[in-house]
Amino acid sequence: MLIEQAFMSLPEIMLGAGYARQEYEAGIVSAFSLAILQELNGRNVTKPISCMCAEKKYLEKGRSLRADLHLNLSHTYTGSHALSKFGYRFSNWIEAKYFRKTKGTPPSTKNLGMLAADIIRLMVLPPLGTKERSSTGRYLLHVYQGDPLRHINPKRKARGAPDRVWPTKLVQAGTQIVESLELDQEKEAF
Image 1 (tube, one colour):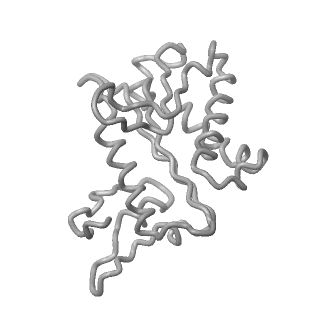
Image 2: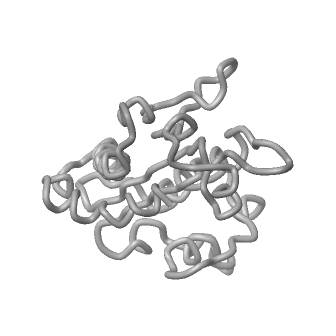
Image 3: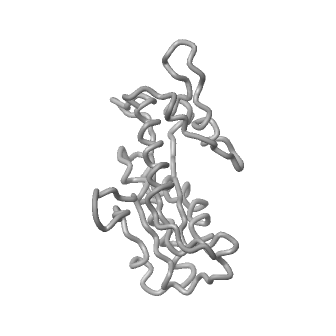
């Protein structure tokens, strides 16, 4: 609930503070961090900045795969186990992608590969919680300048190859179910 409210504040923060002119993904992570901080302050959370960690490692040991942002709400007293039945999560992992028109923009297939990698990390790496309740939230924040399908083209280059279904669903309004990232149909370069 808190993170969803922060999503609603994001356009105002991005347009009002010049984030829209930034050229780096860190700009969207920074803007979203401010939106979350604003929500935590609105709930009178003590030491709200201590709830957030940028570039948090998913695993303590092994490869250094990191989430763009981690939000730990377990000590904020803003949630409860009863609220977790309604979607409130205490440990929230956020991956962000910021696609904008710049010189040297990578091809859309590369963009799709980076987006798919974020989705896979969110699905596989965060801790699961318990059988009784999930304490883990997973969020993919993807922001586009202009038409999203110009940045993540669902068409495959091979003649006669079927279009990718998941990129189109990812940017459609409403609740969408993505059955597969269709990785078995991709070339090795993807």
